[in-house]
Amino acid sequence: MKTKLTFLYDGGCPLCLRETNFLKNRDIANQILFIDINNKDYNPLFFKNISYSKAMSNLHGILENGELIKGLDVLAYSYELIGLGWVYYPLKIKFLSPVLKLVYKYWAKNRLKITGRSNIEKLCNYECDL
Image (cartoon, rainbow, N blue to C red; front, side, top):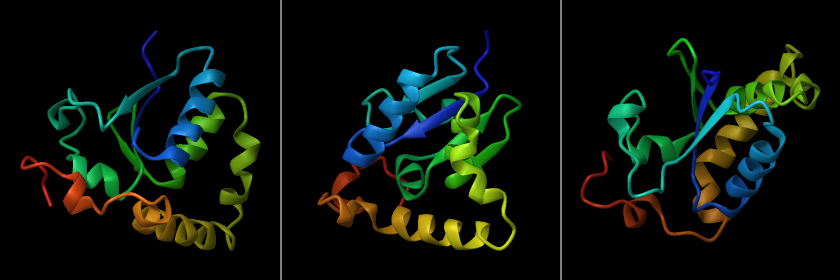
């Protein structure tokens, strides 16, 4: 079976890893391919040229048809695939969705600092596309 979503995640982020492990355990139909961008074998060429630094800036997902989705849309679709789509129902509420996406954008921008990790420049190696 071909996966419906390729989910690029930061395996070095404790909160991201926790969320990803939850999704992996619930994905009994193997509809999601999880790719740790921190793996030394991660190659952007296989994932729509999403560089390490770009992937670190926001959650990225690649749909079965090749379309790219980002941020909360990746999580909402992931939860839908594992049968828990109702968790992200608030994203479907017209006035609430922009607020939630703004909060997520803040999280994505500041998650390294919030989780006590180095900034992107220190995490990057010479191949990073800053």
